[in-house]
Image 1 (cartoon, rainbow, N blue to C red):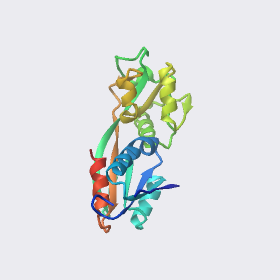
Image 2: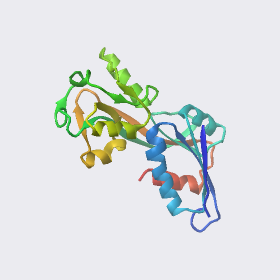
Image 3: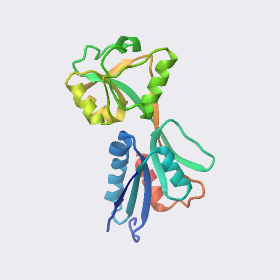
Image 4: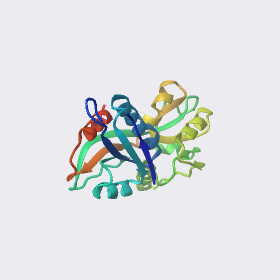
Length: 219
């Protein structure tokens, strides 16, 4: 559990409000999705005091259901409960990537073409890693990564040096692909997406601060 208070001098034209947000421990949520929204929120509403809690989706959901959080922001398979209000769900494709100099760059591939290659993967508890393992298991296939690590920046650095392949959310590697540092691989028989989702409890009064966070996250 990681909790951080971000204090500032409420929404424009009002006194300082409070917003408590839960984000999951997935690297992409902690270091890409959530900071981007918080940065925009602080820019527009410096008087709002924000409390950010980082934990597993299950723990965040428990906190939300006990009024410990205003809303939660997660990257996961689609979730739903009759006691929640889902205000955003956006698909985020997860893709195979390699060095820009990889022999596989620019080719149309099948999973069997790269199954024996050295893979640098996130840890097994990452939900998109679980989705990949499950999809391969249905085909009686499996990957044996040479390294499992939660640090996607390290994985990208290894790929840049032409060391192996990886499987990461597109948003986490989009900039490096655009700059030609790594290459997107087209593996036609594997298609996986996770979903950025925002929820709050149905009995929770939706404050102006919550409405503004949701608006910025959806941009």
